[in-house]
Image (tube, rainbow, N blue to C red; front, top):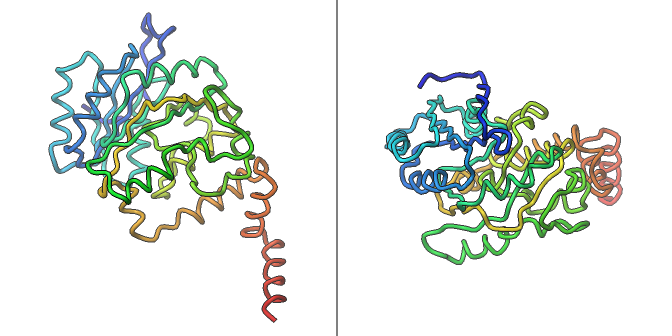
Length: 305
């Protein structure tokens, strides 16, 4: 199929009023090990109006051949686009730009979706103010090692880490998340990975695309950029399955120094400061505002004497 950098307009269909088109976006790179499981979960969705967009970063294995084999297994349109590797963010953005849907459902090549994932998440998108819906997720792993057990224990229930409000099934103003006093505290990503998130496509027109400079936290950076402008929906069910293994980009990135924390903190200071809790505002002011930095320097010098 011919690549196109222009977003296509979804053709009108009778079902598009009740069931708007959802684009399942699957960025791939050498994903032959698990892509069948991901694709099977995509074509088994009970939501009736879907397309599958695969953006492949020049895989050297059988990923694309496996994807093509699924064209005969489903009536869901599958569109495959080749992409020159420029980082994971560029591939995510390329998938979105090729999509036709009013909504974007990411599915990563290692992960899988519950058959009711999209239909249950879409129920909260009936509210036009909602730009992002997320759900709980569980984990896929070959062997539950002590390291993985610790990871799951800490990162398993991300929605419980907010302090000033309780996240329950339903919708909240995105600015309520931003003003929570735990916003800058660990875990930094309290929403989850793209596989457990559904986005309204208009978000990309409003706030732009994933930041291709970031390597590790480009997902949570995007979720928080959406929050000043949209309400956020939460489905209190595990509807996505996130695979844990050592070859994940997140695992590889943790083994090397990356500048993401400073980059996103600077962005929060520049774009989100007015929405934040006073405690978090002060923290960022001390890091980046010239006057506050000067005061911190004076204080440190005083105590050093």
